[in-house]
Image 1 (tube, rainbow, N blue to C red):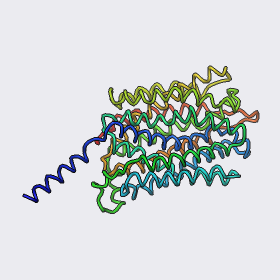
Image 2 (cartoon, helix red, strand yellow):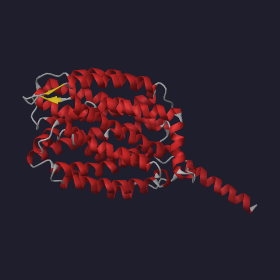
Image 3 (cartoon, rainbow, N blue to C red):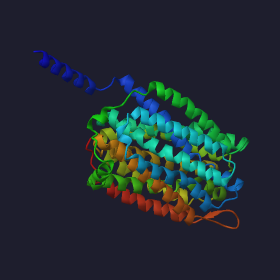
Length: 416
């Protein structure tokens, strides 16, 4: 009778481990992940509005600025691929804390960089940790949040981009305009350190995925990922969707200053109003994706997003309020299409491969963003008068990528 009792006890323990966490625990987890994602997203997007100042201070061309943006993403791409070899063998909490510490140090290095070359090197360091960190946040959502609530949770975490736009970017731009471009990175490094301490306390141990991770050669795990057709569609969706966005985003601020007539101080309004709108619309998109289907919501948002892309990249010198309407609509649909897409990508892989796949997918995403920013830098040219030309070409290319993404997502299926 004793062995049977032990067996029953073990079964009860396993059943208790499978019981979903209380709602308040789930909410705290999502909030902590959103805080981490906020700093990661702010570190990445702050470079775009700082573009005009960096181009002036370092006397660099649009192409060199594009390289400054893409250095972060190329570094994240390499780090994401390498981390896929081992990331699923660690407790998710330990992995996140280690990566976040490296990200915080990298951001501080950016703040201390005195020259273009050293800033470029510092962006490589920050990208190496930040890119993998973003992937691991999404992997945790996939592990901890049931599929029927995953869209809403993804929407809340993705709304961190909106919060960064509302609070972080305007404050960062103000500090940069009043002091220097170094100031936003000092602020971000300090905030990241505080969130690191809070994450150490509030993030729970996350080892559930370890029970299904074998001791096989990690390269065989990569092979398993590569040969699965559904994951190939997921990666292709990541490539096309990322390029559709980041062909345009890096040069919004330089174009607004050079062609539309914004001052550098007025750039903060773009991110303030865009962030205020998307902090709500990103979460609505997540709820709609859970209710109506992630495919349907993505297709609708993606097709509608092409309208503001064309308007934005062909915008002449117009009143400030007219330009802000266009940029705000652009950011609304930019976020609305990413939420259902990332939720579906997270669900396209079984838990035992999720961390490795999301790292590789993040690598692909960062590489795609870097290629898009670099390509935009080659296409966009500066005239003798200081205005930018050929930005409209970038817009049409982004619309083409959007249509390809719409075709790709029809083949993607959720499996876990």
